[in-house]
Amino acid sequence: MKDFFQGRRPLRLDALDLPITWGFCVLAPHPDDFDALGVTLRHFANRGHDIRLLVLSSSANGVEDSFCDPPTPEAKAALREEEQKASCRFFGLPEDRFEFLRLPVAEPGGFLVDGAEGYSVLKVRLGRLSADIALLPHGRDSNPDHRLAYTWWGRLAAELPRPRTAWLARDPKTIDMRDDAFLPFDDAAARWKAELLRFHMSQHRRNLATRGYGFDERILRVNRENARRLGIPEPFAESFEIEVRPAPRPFARPTDVTRSGAFLGWTKKLRSRRPG
Ligand SMILES: [Zn+2]
Image (cartoon, rainbow, N blue to C red; front, side):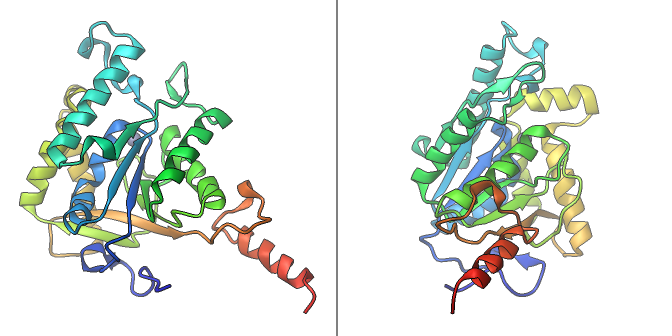
């Protein structure tokens, strides 16, 4: 199969001619993680690709008490889901293309539980979608849910036939990553993205109150900084590290696969044991 991701780095995603049958699935630890990649997703949606969204946690802890009455975890989670639904309507993502998985979270903090229950739900749902490319926040991140989503992606790639490729997105909380690929955009697209992001009003108000600027500006600052670092003429870019995982092998131990070469080392060992 042709490797679309080989060659010069960083790669312009708007110059990629991916087969139209390739589907995308966003593994969003939180409701707003889809929107942070909005311009890239819109580009591929406009080309006719199937776009799916699995929201792992409804992230009630991201809502301030003053924004929700009653300020219970259930009401806050429902509010965040409503915000995401409104944003998906604005984006043009049909209701049957996204799902709130409501995976178990632990208090205090309300972060996802790294356990078999949540993981197996995610595995079943992703397995049904037969997506080719997973999009999720990069794993080197100060947010525990972003780190866990990345860890789970590694396990999923070892246990499911697809997707084999992940585009790991730079987020305000990303600690460091490679800029393997980017989707540049102009001021008009930035205005559209700002409107998309502001559907997450609970996050927008919280950012305004605690940072003095909105959720839209929080994300667009990252996109502006991406463009500056990449040295491109466009004022904004969404940036990704690309990770392609080897196909699962019949006897591979599922949790043993890392891109550090453990898998390759292990398969080499296996091959060397084989006669002839
Ligand atoms: Zn997030």
